[in-house]
Length: 517
Ligand SMILES: Nc1ncnc2c1ncn2[C@@H]1O[C@H](COP(=O)(O)OP(=O)(O)OP(=O)(O)O)[C@@H](O)[C@H]1O
Picture 1: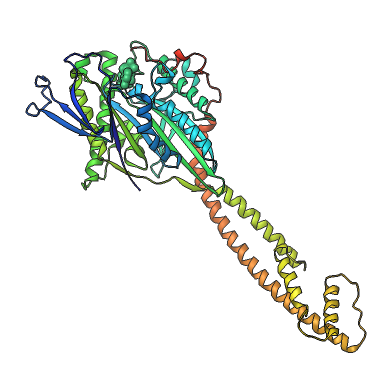
Picture 2: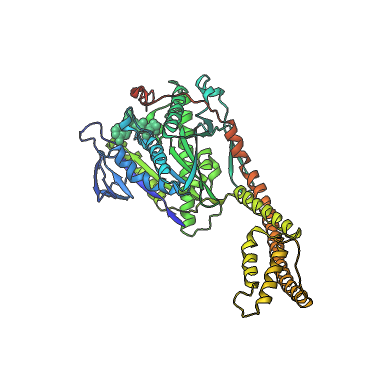
């Protein structure tokens, strides 16, 4: 199924109402028209044009609330994630344009952003979907200067970033990416999810020093993994939701950074440039160009988001821009980038799998029951499943309304009783009666033998089929176990203890701003 990328735009409220405000019009909540200032000195803007138009799935103006943004952007994507499709929501924009505000939120619970709202929504929804049993896992990582780190590793609270273990990437022969040193935490309710988000944000903040503002200069990926099993069948699915807060693009000349900060800015710009190159390559391929190679591997961020950008994933971008003329060059760059992203589409499929372990368990039970039945036949008894049939047959054998002479009926009944061990001896009074008994026995024997042979053939064939199915399932399980070994290993490594930062205890410390703001 094709899934077009959706691109949303959010305008950050202007700090002042002066003539510095960017001039724009929003049409039908879908089109932004920027009126270009004539005195732009950077040379990148075509002064011969008065305005530029940009189209979006939805444009959120300066007054749009967090709830409004969440409801419009996120609910459809999360519903599809809950149905078993991979999904990614990423925020892209200039430094300070509102990416973190949109994704994580601000100081108060009311101003919480997409990630905490998504957690509430997910847990509310899975409570309603009683046909499925769900398990939810969370991981949270940061990419800083082309290295990835685990934001849910408690030891990181006590050690500086330089001493943190880096997350290592491995690609298997099917091009699936596996991560080492990234803990995955099972999460049973909304509060546990929010605690993990806060712990990650807190670790991200404490890792920042004035010389190393990594919180503002890193890409962050909050991943929710959902395992859902249909309780009425043996099908399960695993889907992933990546919620991504990218580092801000910024002009080095404008920010006049130097030393460490210059280095970081270069890394950020480089990885965003690589992101742009990936988008351009994907665009060209979509338009029919012969582009076999998409340069995902040029940066860690594009490698990690490979599936989100050009794979099996429903992807949504939230572009954030400032509403000031001072930032118009960066805003136009974000707007142009978002138009390219909006042209992309991914081929998505439901990540559904038959729960092979459950199937094998059921088949083994059925096989065992059949073996028992077969043994019973071989001992000469009647099988449970065919009891009714035989009884029916016995009933049919009795000449109830056949018009036979009464003596024949009596003989028939006696034989039945004898064969069913209801009487110890056959009481025969004449030669004629003996002959009739033998006739009745012969008939009964032939009919039962025919029935047994048919049943035995049926059971043998069924057993043979089960053996074949079981062999195939065992082989599948072996390959799936191999595939999942990395995932399970990470699960085992995950730390069960989580620092608790409960929202009800101290609302002020939740959704903190980064130290430089
Ligand atoms: N829509 C908004 N409404 C109110 N305040 C906002 C909005 N967007 C951003 N802000 C405020 O602007 C400041 C900068 O926003 P934010 O930290 O989200 O930017 P950012 O794009 O994540 O920056 P960086 O790239 O440096 O991480 C914050 O104080 C934030 O609260």
